Image (cartoon, rainbow, N blue to C red; front, top):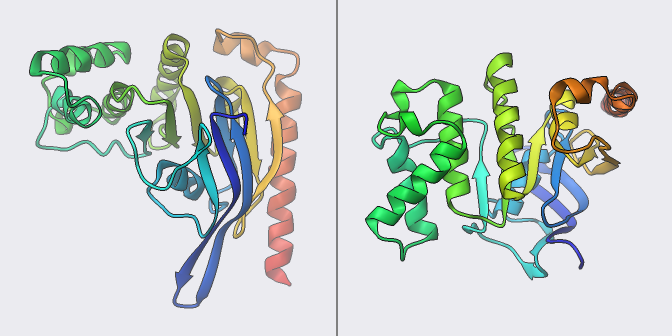
Length: 266
Protein backbone atom coordinates (compact mmCIF):
# COMPACT_ATOMS: atom_id res chain seq x y z
CA UNK A 1 0.00 0.00 0.00
CA UNK A 2 1.48 3.30 -1.13
CA UNK A 3 -1.22 5.71 0.08
CA UNK A 4 -1.57 7.41 3.45
CA UNK A 5 -5.21 6.32 3.49
CA UNK A 6 -6.33 3.13 1.76
CA UNK A 7 -9.94 1.92 1.59
CA UNK A 8 -10.11 -1.68 0.39
CA UNK A 9 -13.22 -3.53 -0.80
CA UNK A 10 -15.44 -1.64 1.65
CA UNK A 11 -19.04 -2.84 1.98
CA UNK A 12 -21.55 -1.73 4.61
CA UNK A 13 -24.82 -3.59 5.17
CA UNK A 14 -27.40 -2.31 7.66
CA UNK A 15 -30.04 -4.53 9.22
CA UNK A 16 -33.54 -3.06 8.76
CA UNK A 17 -37.08 -4.29 9.53
CA UNK A 18 -37.51 -5.07 5.83
CA UNK A 19 -34.21 -6.93 5.51
CA UNK A 20 -30.54 -6.14 4.78
CA UNK A 21 -29.78 -2.75 3.24
CA UNK A 22 -26.53 -2.41 1.30
CA UNK A 23 -25.44 1.20 1.77
CA UNK A 24 -21.98 0.92 0.15
CA UNK A 25 -20.61 -1.89 -1.97
CA UNK A 26 -16.97 -2.75 -2.78
CA UNK A 27 -15.74 0.82 -2.35
CA UNK A 28 -12.04 1.18 -3.22
CA UNK A 29 -9.93 4.34 -2.92
CA UNK A 30 -6.51 5.63 -1.94
CA UNK A 31 -5.53 9.11 -0.77
CA UNK A 32 -1.97 10.42 -0.68
CA UNK A 33 -0.30 12.49 2.02
CA UNK A 34 -1.25 16.16 1.64
CA UNK A 35 -3.92 15.48 -1.00
CA UNK A 36 -7.33 17.18 -0.98
CA UNK A 37 -10.00 14.76 -2.25
CA UNK A 38 -13.74 15.29 -2.58
CA UNK A 39 -16.18 12.40 -2.43
CA UNK A 40 -19.11 13.39 -4.62
CA UNK A 41 -22.50 11.84 -5.31
CA UNK A 42 -26.25 12.09 -4.97
CA UNK A 43 -27.93 11.85 -1.57
CA UNK A 44 -28.21 8.22 -0.46
CA UNK A 45 -25.17 6.99 -2.41
CA UNK A 46 -23.31 6.11 0.81
CA UNK A 47 -20.63 8.80 0.82
CA UNK A 48 -21.28 9.79 4.47
CA UNK A 49 -21.26 6.11 5.42
CA UNK A 50 -17.79 5.76 3.89
CA UNK A 51 -16.61 8.81 5.83
CA UNK A 52 -18.07 7.45 9.10
CA UNK A 53 -16.24 4.14 8.62
CA UNK A 54 -12.96 5.93 7.91
CA UNK A 55 -13.54 8.03 11.04
CA UNK A 56 -14.05 4.83 13.04
CA UNK A 57 -17.63 5.75 13.95
CA UNK A 58 -19.09 2.82 11.97
CA UNK A 59 -17.79 -0.69 11.39
CA UNK A 60 -17.45 -2.07 7.87
CA UNK A 61 -19.40 -5.24 7.09
CA UNK A 62 -16.69 -6.28 4.62
CA UNK A 63 -13.35 -4.71 3.75
CA UNK A 64 -10.90 -2.53 5.65
CA UNK A 65 -9.53 0.97 6.10
CA UNK A 66 -5.76 1.41 6.45
CA UNK A 67 -3.68 4.39 7.55
CA UNK A 68 0.04 3.95 6.82
CA UNK A 69 -0.70 0.24 6.29
CA UNK A 70 -2.33 -0.26 9.72
CA UNK A 71 -6.00 -1.22 10.04
CA UNK A 72 -8.32 1.47 11.41
CA UNK A 73 -11.47 0.29 13.21
CA UNK A 74 -12.06 2.89 15.93
CA UNK A 75 -12.02 6.69 16.32
CA UNK A 76 -8.67 8.38 16.86
CA UNK A 77 -7.14 11.82 17.22
CA UNK A 78 -5.20 11.21 14.00
CA UNK A 79 -8.50 11.99 12.23
CA UNK A 80 -10.14 15.38 12.75
CA UNK A 81 -13.83 15.28 11.81
CA UNK A 82 -16.16 18.17 10.94
CA UNK A 83 -19.84 17.36 10.41
CA UNK A 84 -22.58 19.27 8.62
CA UNK A 85 -23.89 20.53 11.99
CA UNK A 86 -21.28 22.22 14.21
CA UNK A 87 -21.82 19.86 17.22
CA UNK A 88 -20.37 22.27 19.79
CA UNK A 89 -21.06 21.75 23.48
CA UNK A 90 -23.51 24.56 24.41
CA UNK A 91 -22.30 24.96 28.00
CA UNK A 92 -18.72 25.75 26.86
CA UNK A 93 -17.55 28.85 25.02
CA UNK A 94 -15.71 28.64 21.68
CA UNK A 95 -12.24 28.44 23.22
CA UNK A 96 -13.32 25.84 25.79
CA UNK A 97 -14.78 23.65 23.04
CA UNK A 98 -11.40 23.65 21.32
CA UNK A 99 -9.48 23.13 24.57
CA UNK A 100 -11.62 20.06 25.35
CA UNK A 101 -10.40 18.43 22.13
CA UNK A 102 -6.80 19.44 22.83
CA UNK A 103 -7.03 17.65 26.17
CA UNK A 104 -7.79 14.42 24.32
CA UNK A 105 -5.06 14.76 21.71
CA UNK A 106 -2.33 16.47 23.76
CA UNK A 107 -2.96 15.49 27.40
CA UNK A 108 0.57 16.48 28.41
CA UNK A 109 -0.17 20.14 27.65
CA UNK A 110 -0.66 22.43 30.65
CA UNK A 111 -3.50 24.94 30.92
CA UNK A 112 -1.50 27.81 29.39
CA UNK A 113 -0.31 25.64 26.48
CA UNK A 114 -3.87 24.49 25.79
CA UNK A 115 -5.14 28.09 25.69
CA UNK A 116 -2.31 29.18 23.38
CA UNK A 117 -2.87 26.16 21.15
CA UNK A 118 -6.62 26.85 20.98
CA UNK A 119 -6.02 30.51 20.15
CA UNK A 120 -3.62 29.56 17.36
CA UNK A 121 -6.30 27.64 15.50
CA UNK A 122 -9.19 29.96 16.33
CA UNK A 123 -7.07 32.74 14.83
CA UNK A 124 -6.20 30.58 11.82
CA UNK A 125 -9.89 30.21 10.92
CA UNK A 126 -10.67 33.85 11.71
CA UNK A 127 -12.75 33.60 14.90
CA UNK A 128 -10.34 34.44 17.76
CA UNK A 129 -12.50 37.46 18.66
CA UNK A 130 -15.37 35.10 19.52
CA UNK A 131 -13.30 32.91 21.87
CA UNK A 132 -15.32 33.64 25.01
CA UNK A 133 -18.80 33.46 23.52
CA UNK A 134 -21.02 30.37 23.84
CA UNK A 135 -22.31 28.69 20.65
CA UNK A 136 -25.82 30.10 21.13
CA UNK A 137 -24.46 33.61 20.60
CA UNK A 138 -22.63 32.69 17.38
CA UNK A 139 -23.94 32.46 13.83
CA UNK A 140 -23.95 29.04 12.18
CA UNK A 141 -21.00 30.06 10.01
CA UNK A 142 -18.92 31.13 13.04
CA UNK A 143 -19.86 27.91 14.86
CA UNK A 144 -18.62 25.89 11.90
CA UNK A 145 -15.33 27.82 11.90
CA UNK A 146 -14.95 26.89 15.58
CA UNK A 147 -15.64 23.25 14.66
CA UNK A 148 -12.88 23.43 12.06
CA UNK A 149 -10.50 25.00 14.62
CA UNK A 150 -11.35 22.19 17.04
CA UNK A 151 -10.56 19.53 14.43
CA UNK A 152 -7.29 21.23 13.44
CA UNK A 153 -6.22 21.66 17.08
CA UNK A 154 -5.97 17.85 17.33
CA UNK A 155 -3.07 18.21 14.86
CA UNK A 156 -4.45 15.17 13.00
CA UNK A 157 -2.88 13.34 10.09
CA UNK A 158 -5.91 14.23 8.02
CA UNK A 159 -9.30 15.95 8.07
CA UNK A 160 -12.63 14.26 7.36
CA UNK A 161 -15.28 16.80 6.35
CA UNK A 162 -18.90 15.65 5.97
CA UNK A 163 -20.66 18.36 3.93
CA UNK A 164 -19.34 20.98 6.37
CA UNK A 165 -20.94 23.90 4.53
CA UNK A 166 -24.24 22.22 3.61
CA UNK A 167 -26.33 24.17 6.16
CA UNK A 168 -24.93 27.60 5.29
CA UNK A 169 -26.24 30.32 3.00
CA UNK A 170 -24.39 30.85 -0.28
CA UNK A 171 -22.31 33.87 0.81
CA UNK A 172 -21.20 32.24 4.08
CA UNK A 173 -20.50 29.01 2.21
CA UNK A 174 -18.18 30.81 -0.23
CA UNK A 175 -16.36 32.51 2.66
CA UNK A 176 -15.86 29.19 4.46
CA UNK A 177 -14.58 27.54 1.27
CA UNK A 178 -11.98 30.30 0.98
CA UNK A 179 -11.04 29.86 4.65
CA UNK A 180 -10.69 26.11 4.21
CA UNK A 181 -8.37 26.58 1.22
CA UNK A 182 -6.21 29.08 3.13
CA UNK A 183 -5.98 26.67 6.07
CA UNK A 184 -5.06 23.81 3.74
CA UNK A 185 -2.35 25.94 2.11
CA UNK A 186 -0.87 26.59 5.58
CA UNK A 187 -1.13 23.08 6.99
CA UNK A 188 -1.21 20.77 3.93
CA UNK A 189 -3.33 18.30 5.87
CA UNK A 190 -4.67 15.34 3.95
CA UNK A 191 -8.37 16.06 3.41
CA UNK A 192 -11.34 13.87 2.45
CA UNK A 193 -14.44 16.00 2.02
CA UNK A 194 -17.94 14.71 1.32
CA UNK A 195 -20.06 17.05 -0.79
CA UNK A 196 -22.87 17.02 -3.33
CA UNK A 197 -21.89 20.46 -4.66
CA UNK A 198 -20.07 20.14 -7.99
CA UNK A 199 -18.75 23.72 -8.07
CA UNK A 200 -17.47 23.43 -4.50
CA UNK A 201 -15.61 20.22 -5.30
CA UNK A 202 -13.96 21.72 -8.38
CA UNK A 203 -12.86 24.77 -6.40
CA UNK A 204 -11.24 23.01 -3.44
CA UNK A 205 -10.07 19.55 -4.50
CA UNK A 206 -7.05 17.97 -6.18
CA UNK A 207 -9.08 14.93 -7.13
CA UNK A 208 -12.74 13.88 -7.23
CA UNK A 209 -14.14 10.45 -6.43
CA UNK A 210 -17.60 10.17 -8.00
CA UNK A 211 -19.96 7.58 -6.54
CA UNK A 212 -22.73 5.72 -8.30
CA UNK A 213 -26.23 6.07 -6.88
CA UNK A 214 -27.39 4.04 -3.89
CA UNK A 215 -28.28 1.69 -2.55
CA UNK A 216 -25.01 -0.14 -2.98
CA UNK A 217 -23.08 2.91 -4.12
CA UNK A 218 -19.49 2.39 -5.23
CA UNK A 219 -16.71 4.32 -6.96
CA UNK A 220 -17.89 5.11 -10.47
CA UNK A 221 -15.27 7.54 -11.70
CA UNK A 222 -12.12 9.32 -10.47
CA UNK A 223 -11.17 12.71 -11.90
CA UNK A 224 -8.13 14.93 -11.43
CA UNK A 225 -8.68 18.67 -11.00
CA UNK A 226 -6.07 20.58 -13.05
CA UNK A 227 -6.32 24.08 -11.55
CA UNK A 228 -3.11 25.53 -10.11
CA UNK A 229 -2.70 26.36 -6.43
CA UNK A 230 -3.04 28.66 -4.63
CA UNK A 231 -6.51 29.13 -6.10
CA UNK A 232 -8.71 32.13 -6.60
CA UNK A 233 -12.37 31.62 -7.42
CA UNK A 234 -12.36 33.96 -10.42
CA UNK A 235 -9.34 32.23 -11.97
CA UNK A 236 -10.92 28.80 -11.51
CA UNK A 237 -14.17 29.92 -13.15
CA UNK A 238 -12.24 31.40 -16.06
CA UNK A 239 -10.08 28.31 -16.60
CA UNK A 240 -10.57 26.80 -20.08
CA UNK A 241 -11.27 23.33 -18.64
CA UNK A 242 -13.71 24.37 -15.90
CA UNK A 243 -16.99 24.03 -17.75
CA UNK A 244 -16.04 20.84 -19.59
CA UNK A 245 -15.12 19.22 -16.25
CA UNK A 246 -18.34 20.49 -14.71
CA UNK A 247 -20.38 19.11 -17.60
CA UNK A 248 -18.62 15.73 -17.35
CA UNK A 249 -19.49 15.47 -13.64
CA UNK A 250 -23.13 16.42 -14.16
CA UNK A 251 -23.42 13.95 -17.05
CA UNK A 252 -22.04 11.17 -14.85
CA UNK A 253 -24.44 11.99 -12.00
CA UNK A 254 -27.45 12.32 -14.31
CA UNK A 255 -26.66 9.04 -16.11
CA UNK A 256 -26.44 7.13 -12.83
CA UNK A 257 -29.58 8.76 -11.47
CA UNK A 258 -31.41 7.61 -14.62
CA UNK A 259 -30.02 4.08 -14.31
CA UNK A 260 -31.15 3.94 -10.69
CA UNK A 261 -34.64 5.07 -11.63
CA UNK A 262 -34.84 2.36 -14.28
CA UNK A 263 -33.69 -0.31 -11.79
CA UNK A 264 -36.29 0.79 -9.24
CA UNK A 265 -39.02 0.79 -11.88
CA UNK A 266 -38.15 -2.76 -12.89
